[in-house]
Length: 250
Ligand code: SF4
Image 1 (tube, rainbow, N blue to C red):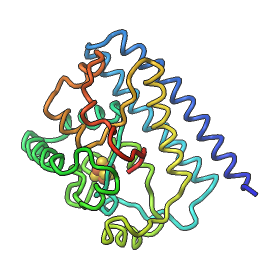
Image 2: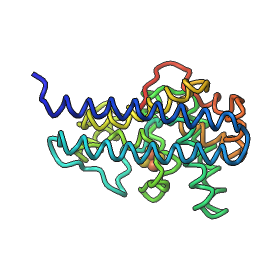
Image 3: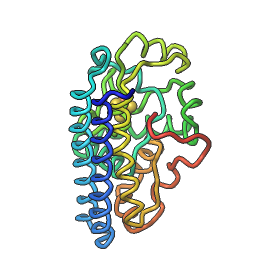
């Protein structure tokens, strides 16, 4: 029999997903009507901010209803899971690009652009399994910590571990060893991601869940990428997950 708390957690996630979808459709329709303006890009950034906040709230409530079997082991300066494929929606990618623009020094931006381009050369188009085998770090990992932690994508918020030893073993085995996670947290973060993608589709945008490194490479080479994407140009399509296996999180 399914625990009542699990049912309530799932209901909570379903409601949040629907709300995210409706809110995204409304905000993206307005941004589309004003396509190409800086205000329309700002509206998309606001949408991403709100989605991340909603995800954090839902995750908090879900963990309150159904606590993990052991305390969550994730913390800053723990990089084991940051070596696998990361996916994100275009609004999330634009938010990370804005954070980099506002918070990184010119030298840091140059170094990051080089790192992103190097990693992109190895990872573009790989499925999650092949990407994990490479064990290349996410380019946003710096000195063992996430350099964009405040705006890290939903996929990064979905995956939490209750056993750091298992994370290390998974890294050592190129993701052959399983990592015990909290399935409802994955569901909560992915639900918000689904709400964004479905709301974008409702507003007439092609559904493009992008591979993060490739999307960063495109965005760092083109400061106008947000405006072009809002004008209906396939700005993120080269980074879209069109090949082989697709999964929303890592
Ligand atoms: S964005 Fe940050 S948390 Fe996510 S994989 Fe990259 S370094 Fe890790």
